[in-house]
Amino acid sequence: MSMEHPVKQMMEKMSNDELIEMLRREYLRKLTRYRLTDEFFRKKYRMTYEEFEKENVVAKRNFSWEVESDAQEWEMAIDGISTCLRKLGEIKIEY
Image (cartoon, rainbow, N blue to C red):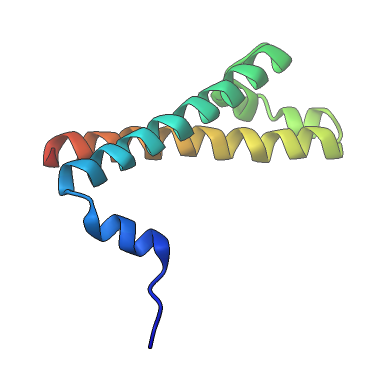
């Protein structure tokens, strides 16, 4: 006797509209988190991510751990914003 995973059982009972709405809410949650991260770094460095990269701030600050770590986190947030917006657009097309 195999026991199915409770999440799988729950998802199988959901309609397509309910699943799409669940995905939409998840992408919006992630988008909010990524935008907050972007806004935090914009204020911290007083520039956009594009300006940060163009001005090579990591090198100008002697490749400090803090600045490199910020650069990686900021890049992930920018990529995340783009991905979430794309996915939300795909959901609207299908919805």
